[in-house]
Amino acid sequence: MTDFFKDNNLFVLYPADDSGFPARFDPLKHCFKSVRLLNYAVACHTEGIKSARRNILNTVAREKIDLVICCAFASDYQLSVEFYASLREKTKLVFWFGDDPSYFESYGRYYAQAADAVITSDHLVACAYNRLEIPALVYQELNPKNRVCPVKIEKDIDVCFLGDLRKRGRREYIDFLKKAGIKVAVYGQGAALGYLPAEKISEYLCRSRINLNFSQIGLLDWKNSDEPLLNRVRQNTGRPREIALAGAFCLSEYSPSLGEMFKPGVEIDFFRDKAELLEKVRFYLANPEKREEMARAAQEYAVKNYREEAYIPKMLEDLADRLKAPAQRANKLYFSDSFKTREINSLTFSMCVMAKNRRLKAAFGTVPLLFKHGLALFLAGFAGGMARALRALLDK
Image 1 (cartoon, rainbow, N blue to C red):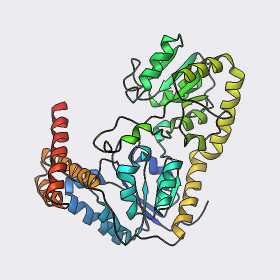
Image 2: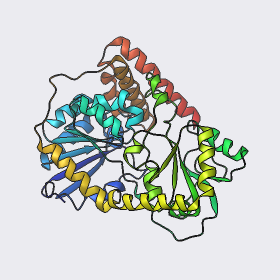
Image 3: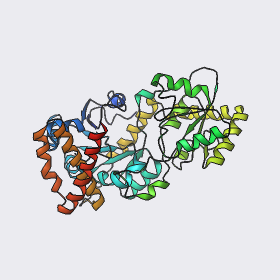
Image 4: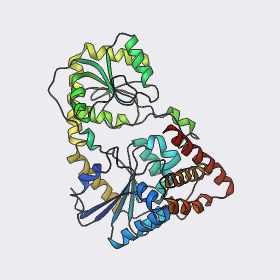
């Protein structure tokens, strides 16, 4: 492993204390001189956005931070692109985006203007960043709750799906298989069987003869609804990697980027529609030798490339190479009106969160930020943010 970062101080900005945050950064702690973590959303909503920005800049200067890695949600605009551009004047800055297939067009490419490099989960999105002369690496986020491993157990489940059944197309595929007489076990949000505990995931992957994966992105919402072509996008999820690490077999809905992670027909197989799904389910149920051969090949490749102990050093080596190169700094930051409207929408919602939590000084301090793009965009963004805040209040 490269020693590039051994004397570096790392500052990680992360968006939430669930979804595996902040434990997913634990593997980085032995690779840097020091690692500091900050939930930027909590900081902004308690201290106020301006104060949180100032404190981040002061921390970078005071603690001599060499690198900032930011993992941002596409709903979060409290730390603006302009703020990150000013931060980059003091230290190296890297964004680690987990949902780029869904939010590259609406969010990632705009924020990446301020970065020295981007870590993305999708090979095709990496090409889009490189087209903008923004260095991009392809590495998926690590979720410590889903550290899977092989389990020696009888395969007594024909077809299994672990995940959110509410997302686009998934229930239709599952119902189609069931109507065709295929026994399918489904666990996750929207499923009758509910969630599997994290400690049971490896067991159920290994109990299943076929593990399904789906690649369509979620339904478009306020964060990306102005990009209707996203309805055609197929993403690269982390589930096939977990299935492979468990030594199990994965049959996935087609994704061009997923074909860069595993060899189709050798380590994984794809389907593109219901008819092909049913045909391949029947084939692999009837041909266990072929299925298990592919599972072993996928596991061998995944252990060498996607285990944390191999994955993290390789990522840091690639990142070091990018950061050693001369930085490309744009003379101007570019934003669409849609991006600006979403920014005001997000800031409005944040202001409402502060007010609800009785952080009135922080809420009032947000008001001037709402007018940064002029009256017309303020009106559009403010209306959207207030509507979301009202819905969130009524839902509770």
